[in-house]
Length: 166
Length: 166
Image (cartoon, rainbow over all chains, first blue to last red):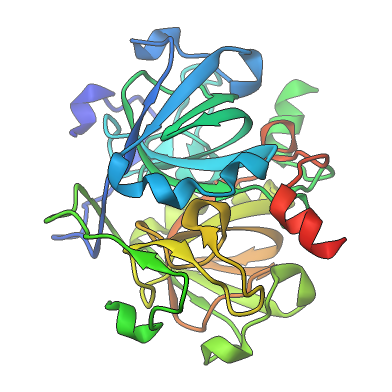
C-alpha cells in the first residue's frame, strides 16, 4: 500500500496521511471476476457483460434475505492496491491533472469503490452479477439495494468529462 | 457501538462480529445538516430540499479540483451510531423482517452510507449540497463524481418495496 505501486506522475501531488485511521472495516466476502491483472480490467464497467460472482462470508448469509427481489444492487468493495495520499492525479488514459474527488480512480484517501450492478441471481451466499470492472479476489464491504427514486439521476453531468469528449 | 443503541426487536437477529477489523478508514471531513436527532432526519433524502454543508479537511482541499464541474456527486459517510452485527432487521416504519443487505438501514457490518446529492457550489473546502438525510456532524469518507452512464438505472426495482406500496 505505497505509492510505488503507481509511481507519482508529473502533475500529481501527494499529502501526508494522518497518523492513524479513525474507523475499521470488516471484509464480508470476496468478488470473483475474469480479470487477474489491472491492465486487463475493463476501463468502464458498462464495457463488459461478464458475469461476476460475489461470495458472501457464511457469517452474513442471512443478511441476504430479500436481496433476490432487487433488479440492481450497489456493491462497495476495497481497492487495497491503491495509494491513499494523492490529492491531484493524472489518469493515464486522460493525461490531464484532476482532483482525486473528481475521479473514480481507486487512488483516494479511503479506497472504497462503488459499483451499481445488475443482479442475475442469488444462490445461498453466492450472487451472480453483471457490471463490475474490478480485479479477481477483491474484498467485499457492503451490498445495498439500488433505489431508482434516490440513486438514479439520468441528467447528471460531469463537466470535465463531457468537455473531454466534445 | 452496541446493539443497545437500537435494541433488538422481535424478528431481528445478530451474529458474532469478527475478532478484528481488516482495513482502516480516515475521516476526511464533516457533514452539517439541520438534523440533530435521529427522529428528526427525513425518512428519505428526496423528502428534503434542505441545503447541507460538507466541510472537507484542509489536508484534502486540493483533491476537490474539478469537482465543481459535477452536477451531482456521491458522498460516502460513516454511520457511527449503528450496531454492526444485525443480519435480520425489522425496520420500525415497515414492521417486516428483512435481510440487512436488502435495506439501506445504517445498521450493517460496515456502516458506510451512500448518498447521491445535487452539488450547488464549491467554496474552497466547503461544498453546498441537496439530498442528504443524515445527522448533523456525520463524518465524511469520500466524494465521487456521479456518472449517469454507469450509476443511473431508472428502471431498477426493489421488489419487496414495490409490493409494500401496492
